Length: 509
Image 1 (cartoon, rainbow, N blue to C red):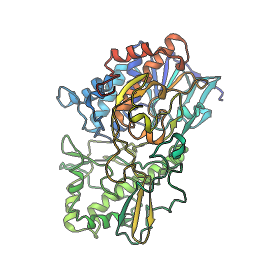
Image 2 (tube, rainbow, N blue to C red; image 1 turned 90 degrees about the horizontal axis):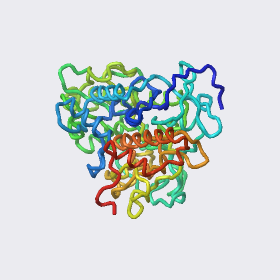
Image 3 (cartoon, one colour; image 1 turned 90 degrees about the vertical axis):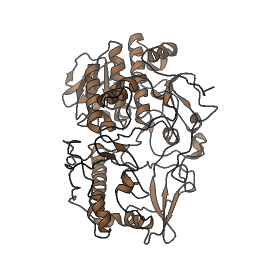
Image 4 (cartoon, helix red, strand yellow; image 1 turned 180 degrees about the horizontal axis):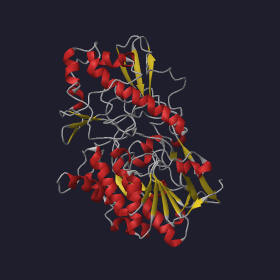
């Protein structure tokens, strides 16, 4: 594909693309096998979204499913920072980044920041093997590669088959697949019902597939401490963008920001986690559809629109004259934390990472679907971890219906709950390409799944455990010299269990 000139070859065994929790766990596992890693991180920070704002972790409904180094080294490590003898799942971003840096030091991985893959010209593939990746310091070579990024750029550039958006219902016979108008929210009392961010009515039938992706947002952190930073007014601030939010606040008689934020996630030291919150909130459905397969230039445009939406909303909540003074005064008891995100490109105290809930998905040796999350298909021949979390898809789009209704489509339940799943096992085969494909790559975050299949296991603790499995698969492939598709499962299982992985649990029979 690409000409590998010039080349910097430091003798690394594995190149990991992404210093996410998954990438860090892969590096730790490789270090325990005596192997060296070079981590190429596309942003300016390590730790992924758990250091970038997602600090209320979505843990499995069966606590014992969260295991391995992900629990004992990362979440127990966070607990230790707070003086706890055990894991902590609500924490400050700066603590998550501190623990991430400590674990990277322990892994002895070399980390290069601001290293983005833009396309096939940045990845050297010869035959069925990746040979190198272009960096700002020249081409870097390794014998094996792990894609631990949220976008799957290494995977895609290497020619690994992938998809994005929503498959049609008929593709895998998934009841929840494709366009879901019946399962949509319908909120009334919005006139006109075509304002931003409402989009056109989809011209498609229920169950048809599309290239649309569930909404992203910034997982903000607010502070009530005296040194909090007042919410800044963005340069492109437009209060009209929050018309529907204002109507919704009046409809529900919500008295202040504290009524929303303090019921979501209290963090240590007077801080709070933000999420979508209300039907109209910090999510921004529809803006991100180009993100998964887009250029980095297009992604930056999307990120900028998300920044404007989130920052403008915070300023609006604290200052807009259409809101009661009591509401605004309550909102001003919150601000941005000056000790978090101190070097964020979007301003001190504002997250430096957009929460990419779903982007590309590999089409690999096995595709995880809705059926795999439920009995009798919940047990697997080659499990690498266990998981249980409801099928969680945020809204994909708003569109008008009638004269005063805004439809929020994309959830799988039709209300604020997630369709339940059974306790299930994640198979090794979702972590690498099918036979005949690239032989020296594993993929931990953009693993092989349908959109519906992805909605349950798409959580950071599970990514961490999948990263561990990716590291062990890489170590075995390097040891045997065989393609990753020809792995030995008993050897893989023994390696995973050696450092605490849990491959089966009661209730899986």
